[in-house]
Length: 90
Image (tube, rainbow, N blue to C red):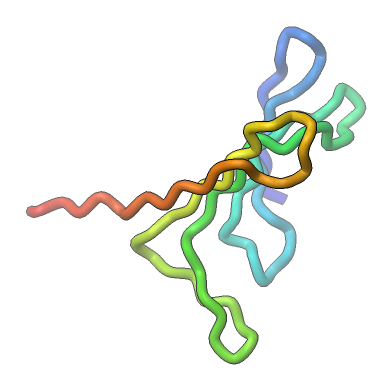
């Protein structure tokens, strides 16, 4: 599993990890993990935009989504941002 872990001063850890679902393996989850390794809280999901073609997920390559969990008491994301890939004119 691809995972980055950053210890926080309160015993929790800030983590970023790749989705283990092979159909959505281009997503990264950012969240908070407890000292014992339990997932505690979602912060955001970052992924390329995607569509479904004949029930298959097709990820794009020039648009990205960020789903932000801005309410600590809700399991649903509160904000969705779409960011285009920067185009270098060279």
